[in-house]
Length: 365
Figure (cartoon, rainbow, N blue to C red):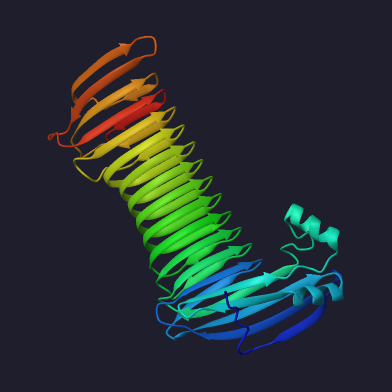
């Protein structure tokens, strides 16, 4: 049976009922502080809504939680009643500690409860009514799981692994961390450095300095990463710019991708997507691009490779310096042709291009 431990000690307890000048609203506030001793290697999960979470690592074998709850209502009694229904619940199982801020249901009659169950929404609440802000200190090696809606999360002086599910808010991690598993919608992600990351992003923005291994699924987002080791990408309607990537693999639809430097390998399937590659670092590149109705522009200067192309319709251009060019039209009606050639002094790289329509160019810059 799950045990719920009440607050063992209240460091601060403050409750205010104040009218907000000019708006006819009342503000009720309560601040509580709780300290919990935890075991080495413990995991900590926090679930919250309608507020910000600040997490700071420290060297104490305990977790400190400061909860500030603010309620605004037009009626004084409503503000007090709603504040009384909000509380943080802490469960402590030794190696697993959890914190969940809960809003108890308002006492209603039979039809009121039935309506709430049917529409699955509390009509009396909105983000403007409630703010539940958490400030948490915990050991910097504690594993984290965070669930938050309608608020931002900031993590600093901490270096372990995190799992998060955040909606309508930003996540910022200020220190290099080992591992991140992130589900994020309608907000910004800002990282310094992650060794291994799995990210599901919707209508958001990702900005990072360095990610060694990244598995990313994104929809309608902006992505800016300075350096990636391996990138496995599923993208739809995204704007992507990457400074340096060793290997990139994935499927992209209806977006734009700018790769400043590719060190080793490209393996991409494009649909109505623009791909720009400014530099192939490896003198013997390995590139495979399959595209439909897309624009592909790759700078091949300083490389050497064999080229194979199968294309139906569209436009395909290569530099005059390419040697051994052989072109064969397989179907004149659809302009389906096969082209082979070689580039550079040594033939140990390979570029394969397949597609339908679109515009594909290999250029020397």
